[in-house]
Length: 215
Image 1 (tube, rainbow, N blue to C red):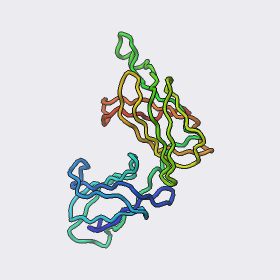
Image 2: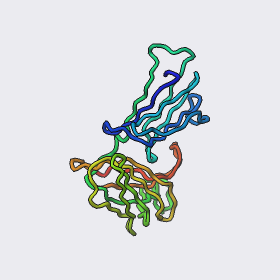
Image 3: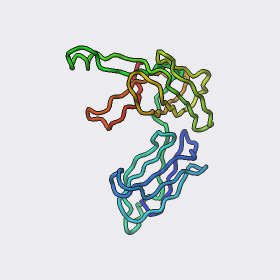
Image 4: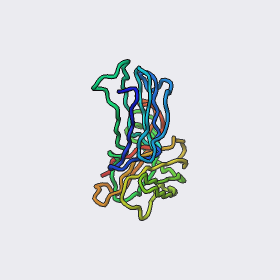
């Protein structure tokens, strides 16, 4: 990369304002932040950096748009890039309706540990707050899960949304969750089932909800 470059973030060809862009010094994304800012109305932000290795992360409404490491040389070559372009929400799972269940998938209660892991029990997560945010129109829809963990958003227009879930209870806590969801009448999926994800076992940690493929 050139020492002075532009980050541009879009969705479906539309520039996105308010995307958080952070750059960490060194090739490891966990190192100290050396630059941070948000994209303007044209979806862009200008970055100026001295020579070195860097890690760039961009996100909007808790959903990642980019994660990329790069190098800024001491001398600018003709091949060095002056612009990074990213798409937000392009790979969002599609559904015809934004409805489904929130469940806490727990191990079975028998004496054999392996049997318990293979025979899990789905406990409903009741009273969770769910918010849908359309990043293009700015529309926001809210609902909550009932005693069976079921939820539904009525009359949601087609488009890509950030789905934020927090609160609620089974008999365990979980972290808040952010997912990109595409609403489309041609989608194969009709409902969403989100299950509490156990931390550990080689994962990166966290107990957020993840989408099950129930098509």
